[in-house]
Image (tube, rainbow over all chains, first blue to last red; front, top):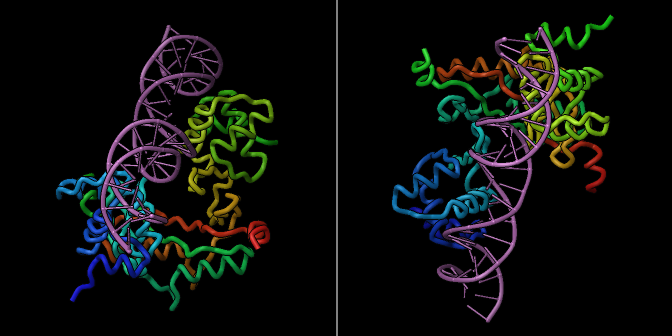
Length: 145
Length: 145
DNA sequence: ATCATTGCAAACTGTTTGCATCAAG
DNA sequence: CTTGATGCAAACAGTTTGCAATGAT
């Protein structure tokens, strides 16, 4: 049986609340990519009138708890229910997002390679590199030509 | 002899103006990394009272003309007088930026590898990946511990 | 004389915050 | 009962824009 959202929240040190249940429930339905604004609107359509600031607040909270992942879309932050490692393809024109499995070069992920190389060379302490890619999706390619 | 800034601007299809001369001249002194705000303040200290919006406007203009490069710093756009390919290390704590020569894995740059791989796999048209890295510079590492 | 650039203030976008009210533990 | 979450409006940062005045060609 599925773990209740209440429990899932609890396990991550978060209180239950109705907005939290709605938001987390939405992300858990399947893989989702939503900005604060788009999520706010989607939930409103479903009859959940959360305030926009509540949406922002909870996206941060869920992200901090590790329940969703944040990445930079075109101008706005986007939240992803898929928290396992993968890259994003982000369409410059329509903003749509596609997941891309992690790539390896010579048996190593570019992320690890870059991070290690940079740390060795520079003396900096380097974060996990972000390897999301901007581009144009097939739809927009067709529409443009 | 050095090409005049007036000429350099002209060659790139840009009109001459005093703000443009001051800004481009500043970047040409040596490698610089400046945000709009920091550039505005630096120039003010030197006695050049450009308006902030003029600085914004011209940074965009010079970037569009290919005379400087733009990348995303911590929250704000940063402009780089070094337009040849290289990576950036960006300090999360103090915002300082260090240049990093282009890295190769198995004889290929990760940029090219990633772009090609993504295009093959996805059918998207993919931009040149951005491989700038966030981290903590040695200074801030020392100060923090 | 024409057309781009400047400076200023106002607008805008995405996001955060202060605060009184309300709900969870 | 105590603490944290909500909703609203106001604040905020970075950037862009409208427009009248000015400057470059």
